[in-house]
Structures are given as C-alpha cells and as structure tokens.
Length: 277
Image (cartoon, rainbow, N blue to C red; front, side, top):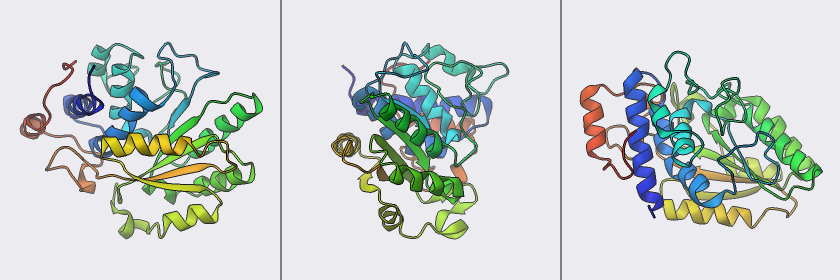
C-alpha cells in the first residue's frame, strides 16, 4: 500500500505538470494544500468514488477556494472518481476539468461550482444543517483560503453556523499568509483569526498543514468535537508552493505556470511514486 506521503508527492507532480501543459492555473495554493486533501480523501473522510450527488450516508467535502482545482482534480482522480488519464485535459476546451470546478460538466466528486470566493462557507453550513435535519450522522468538511476571508459573506455564514449549532461541520482555513496581490498582512490584515472565530463561538483548532502526520492527527482530533454544540474550524498553517523550493512562500506562484526549465527543476524534486498520467 502506498503511504500518504508517497501519494502526496505524486499529486504534486500532477499539479505542476497539469499547470505547465496549458500554461495557466494556480500551482501555489494547490501545492500548499496537498497534504490536507490527500489525508482527507485517502484516510480520514468516509466517501464513495461511485459518487451520488445527494451524499446521503457519507461525508461531504466542499472546496471553496476553487482556483486550487489542480490538487482537487488530482486527488479525485487518484482516489477513483474518474480516470487518471483525464488529468491531461485540464483547462482545455470542452474538458470536464475546468479551471474552476463546475457542476454542469458532471465531473464526479464536484458538488458545487466554486471559485467565486467567499461562497463555500455558506454552502458547507447549509449542507451540514441538511444532514442534521435528515438525521444523517456524517460530517461535512470544507476548505477556504485565508485571503478569501476578506469576503463578508463568510462572516454571515460563520455567525449563522454558531447560532444554529451546526456542529457536524469541520471547516479548514488554508492559512498561508498569501493572496494574489501579496501577503494577507499587506492586502488586508486578518488580525487574530483564532480570537475572531472564538468570538463567533466556534471550536478553534490549529495544525501544521504541510506535515502529513500532523494533518491526519489534526483532522481526526477535529472529528472528536463533532456533536458537541459548536461548528469546528481548523486554522491550518501552510506554505504556498510547498514541495518545490523555488516556489515556496511566494505569492507570485499563486496563479502562474512554470516554464519548461522550471518544470524540470520541480519534477526533479518530486520523485514519481504512483506513475504519471
């Protein structure tokens, strides 16, 4: 059986190859969230790759920061939702793998169109509340960018979730301190995120999002708070571009593709573990 770390390494190879092939896409955040999505889909979450859109009887995941679609598509393909070879169609005309995930393409694993930032929290809260109303004991997971919290709709949903005691939701914030125009501190400071979520009456946890063991432990720990009266948020510290030395920690890799030489440098740092598509 392949280790989660080996799977994550291959997914990173997929990300840079997909973005390079069409010279467009968002590698930085995708690389930073690789451990999280690998752990979620290959270890933590109860889900079925056969994919039923209503999601009854299984855990659900909603990607709010939809621009990191490369990592999402790779994880879905490698966990059995659709053929791995389809990754070669990323961002091409008439593909199911659009730059931002869409539902009208009917790609298995995609439950909402995302990429219009700030909307995923509302959707995740609604889905979690629906599960409670249906006496479905499964969990809703969601992922959000830290820069995305600039959008006010998030805070309406965060307030609503606490009021309704939506305690079957585990939302994770990709806390990398970077957004498209620079650092979050320079664009619009987030202040004390832990104190803010606590003030909104959420259960707040923290974890290192680029340490696989810490991610698995952090997600499993978060599950122990389900059903205890509060929505749960994990503030996940990551590094944009993680795994490729010349990309790490820079907002400049938010949305640009590596050239041929940079691709080869990147792949040299990421040994092929599961086989390229």
